[in-house]
Image 1: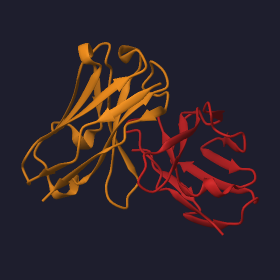
Image 2: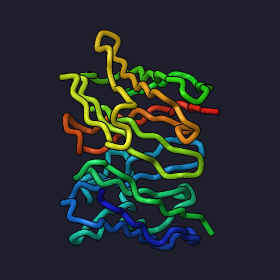
Image 3: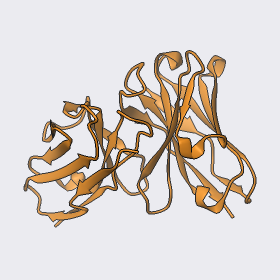
Image 4: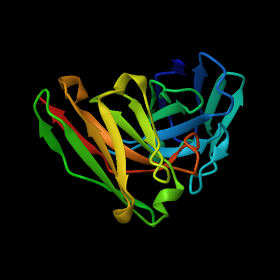
Length: 107
Length: 120
């Protein structure tokens, strides 16, 4: 199975700061990577698909990028509603597993 | 608007089976793959497999092979997940997830509200 690692596992960030979350895949997954935000008690919400395509309705402060097997989610100017846990998911090789998550707290 | 409404919470005993439904509306059911994902308490999501409502085709994660079945009733635009031989570590919230496109690798844009399955 492809292993996904995310860093950091936890972030406490003031409103307005930039946030960068990294997801590394153990093998080449092309651009078959999605990013999700999950809030407590809710289903995950799609932010980015195909590594860098912003899902309709998601604010433009969210950006996805890729370099080889390293993928980055950047939030430019953290807002209070951006708290939650962020997961990456690879959809290249079965099983389509998720990363372990990055919890973002508003400082 | 697109909606995926799942069946209610289930309490089961070890060895039981459970069948969860996912009633869809607001889009053409057979035009998009459906995935099933579960999330155990305090854990990240776990992908279980996908179902093609147009062909009836499936692809299951090897971990669940032989224990899960994904089906649908296109006449009522509803997808189903059945899990058999339940164990305590099957306790989780189960989600149906609509894909963005007629492509199992597209990414899940709409999720059901989740069905809590508790096994004791």
